[in-house]
Structures are given as C-alpha cells and as structure tokens.
Length: 314
Image (cartoon, rainbow, N blue to C red; front, top):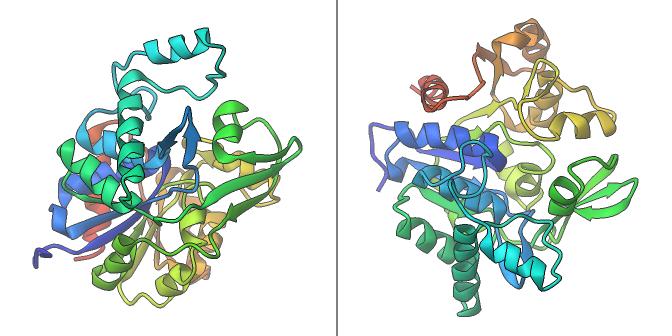
C-alpha cells in the first residue's frame, strides 16, 4: 500500500549513475512509494548462466554489497572460479567474481524452474534484504546491439570486451517491438504520481526501456510530474560512454541534447551547476531547468540530490 504522505515515484534506471540516484531515493522514500524499473537490454548468457548486469548493480547497490570503487560487482569479491575457467581454456573477458557467480547460478536455476525474471528479481532482492521494488523492464528478451566500425556488437561485448572503443553508427533494441513491459512496470505506471529518469546512458540504459511498445506513449500521456536528471556534465558523461556515443551519432554532447531526447516525456531537467549557461535553451523547449550539483561521489551526495528532486513533487 502506498504511503499517503509521500509521492509514489517510478524511477527508470540503468548503469552506475542510475543506481546511485536510486540509492538516494531509497533513503528518502518508503518501499511502497518507490519502484525502480531497470534496463535488461544488456542481459547476456556467460558460462551457461543468465547474467543481468544492471539488475545486479541495482541490487548490490541497495543491499550495500556493491564494489563502490568500480560501481559494479560485489565488494571484496574473489575470482578463483574465473581463474579455474581460464585453466580450462575458457575465454573469460567478462569479469565475474565468485559471489557474483552465485547470483547468476541462483537466477539461472529459478528461471529454469519456470519463474519469470520479475519473480526471480523479487526473490533475489528480498533474500539480500532489499525491500524497495526493483523490477526488470520486461520478462521478455530484449538485446541492445550497437552497429560499429567493427560490425554488430552486443552491449557487453562493446562496453566490456572492447572497452567502448569502436565507433558507433546506430543502436538497435532487438526484440523490443514484441516484448511486453513487465507487470511491475505496468503497475507502477498506473499508480505512480511522478516519473524520474535517472542519470543513465540515454541509448544503452534508458533507450531499451523506452523502446518497449506503449511505454513512451504512456509516459507522454502521464499526468504527474516527469523529472529527468542529465547524465552529461560540462560537455561529457559523468561515467561511461554516453558522451562518446552521442558525438559519434552526430549529436551535441550536452544537457541540451538530453532535453531533446526526452522533450516529449519530461517536465523538468535537473542539470549540474557547471551547465547553468544552458538553462535558457532548456526553457525554450518548454522544459523547466533545475540547476544543482548532480555529481554523486558520496552517499550524502546521492541523498541530497534525491531530496532536491523530491522537493519538486511537494
């Protein structure tokens, strides 16, 4: 049941930036008033196991288990299983720690038993003490594929295997046109009083979610407040290849371009104080700019940004 005195927020997220803000929001809102919808476009099978990188990053972050230096994986993890796989001649370009392996083993077991990804995600999170709702964008397979000067690459092959070095000419979401939004996402859209687009990569993290049938239309028609936090600060991404991809696609690497990407589904753009000179251009698009500090280095930073966003909903 939604707590009456708090807004009900649906946050869309993927990657490290999304997990940081989601953590801040989780400190400010009770579990029933926050649903975090996470990208699954970069889910992939490694060593026979179903790996959901963004779902795991979110779960580890909210459970306090994350590797805070890397932003992904489990803090203090070891890699003996990977070392053994190498002895067997297995290509281990995708780094998986031993405790991380346990997550993927358990997820794969539950999926093989006929559970949906939504059901599995709920169980894994509850077992780790995460009671804020983390839901996958879909229970169906969607694969983010990048067309590059080295050919078609999956998101993980591009980002991890090739360290985001190939030049990108197009991003596609294979299977999105026939995938169903997850029950958790559909329900959240019905009950939410506000939307928050976390500072995630617009093409690799939020793009797959918005590519699902009916989702962008539903967000366009959403009657509550819609707030987007720009992942671009001072002409580049805070973390990850968003800025590089934007430039290679012929787009301006700035919060102005982020506003353009979400113009039909955003009321407020939260942007860093370094970019205050762009506020007028944002306003001319019919979007209200909120100038603040969006760099989240500490837990206090994450909570402070979340609180500032939530003041817009009062």
